[in-house]
Length: 239
Image (cartoon, rainbow, N blue to C red; front, side, top):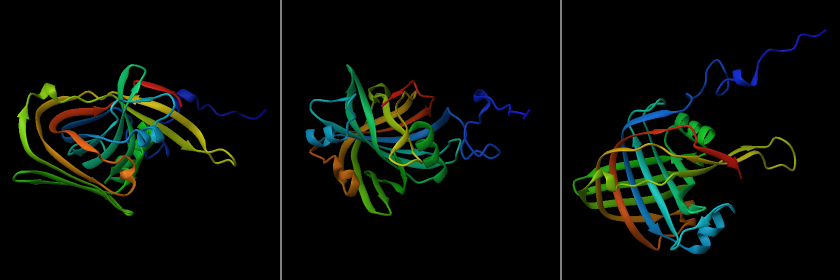
């Protein structure tokens, strides 16, 4: 009789190859992070084009951009920028991650494969100036975002609010006539310990792929310093 292998499903490594995982398992602690968040109004048609059927649009329609500088993470320092759609899951406000740019290959792989962020490699430049901050986001295809936050004034840390994040976690199929072997909706609820917060006048210019959610008016711009994390998912559900 042949000898069957002993590897149980519970013993499978978090990632492969097993001898040298590319990134650590969650949660990822992210202390001393800097985050810029801009909320802006956009078009109904654009929002509906990119929302899954289980989600509904906000009224009025809006999008969110966050830019993060993580000086200390389990995969080293990295910067990231994400464009979200403001939406609702039932009665609950959520932010669906539509596009993400990350400047670290290891962080990109973890964000995409563990949590489902639609990440691609690129540059996320954060330049602090005497009267504010300027952010430039680009990939090999060209510029995506120019963001300026000026005239920022201190606000109470508790006024900085962040909606739970939704992502679409996928794995491509290796068989014909099948697009995905895995298609899940994931909800991630990071904990935020905001140590300082400011609100200022924000201006954004969207180009390339990020112009799919056109800017029709800035609602608010915020900058924060915080301790946060990327935790295990709160919910995972079929698409």
